[in-house]
Image 1 (cartoon, one colour):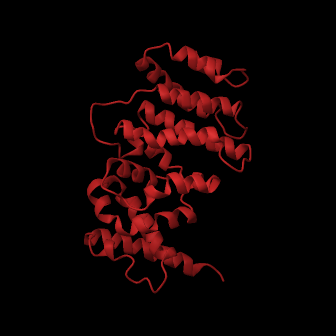
Image 2: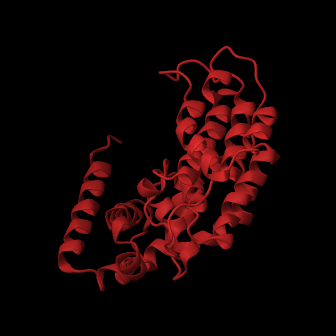
Image 3: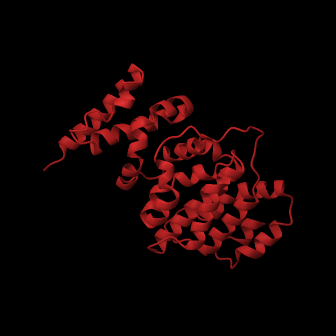
Length: 265
């Protein structure tokens, strides 16, 4: 019924729909949210046309996110965005974020709406209430977008999380999101440089699923962002990583350097 009411061409508002959904048992609402999130995010087969009623879509998705339940009995924080994206909370969080940034792009906005920043803050704080919440990890995947559109908010809310890969559930989840980011910009590379330099031991022991992404970003840091006089920059990694891992890293660096050298002057 929800998809019929919000179909392309229909005239609808988010709040009346959310009012009805709040009357349902939370478990039922979670199932509905998981089932409709993708279609609300992408109501048509192609993205050639602008979204209809994008602000209402964002409001509805955020309202659904607030109504979804966390799944599982484990007290372990999420460390795999792909797994998180199979849960109601993860699916709706990702759908909301993608819809927000698609809307900003289509409307050519120059800054993030304050209402969306408040939603982002709720995402960031969600894991403090329940360590199982994947929402901060999903937000981390859009860190470069946030940094581009609202650098001040990024500096206040996100930059501190990028100073190190800490031995905390919140840090591990957030970095798992960074390692699967939708976009990695020069600015984000600068923001993550110090943590990537020293983060190998934490990644290798606590985020094994992110090792390949770490090698990719670390080798890019070394090839593109490290000056000749910073000859010891990679030591925390090269002195601790296994030989096979170092070999993959060396191949990555060599490949990147060869691409730079092949560019015409």
